[in-house]
Length: 133
Image (cartoon, rainbow, N blue to C red):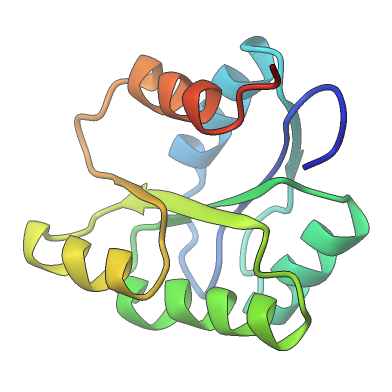
């Protein structure tokens, strides 16, 4: 982790064109004291990882509403591993069925937030995961 504030890349991988939720989460994390880099829509996993490495990010938060979470989340994790950056934590959310959450966790996703998760839950998880004592 970097000294100081937690640095988080918020990304919309794949062809999903809806980013309001990602922007709301990015703002909540920023307001909670994190440094947030929002990559925008239609990002390839390799581009997301490049941004995270260049920005010395502690975490990548992925937002997937397209149903491609079982492909996109693991692709980002595999790209991190291939580039020697597995220390960057991956978390995310979106329209993710409950039965897919355990599969994502087994592949290395640290936390999954589904519709209805409050912003305080996400902020609290980030604070507890990246506490800078």
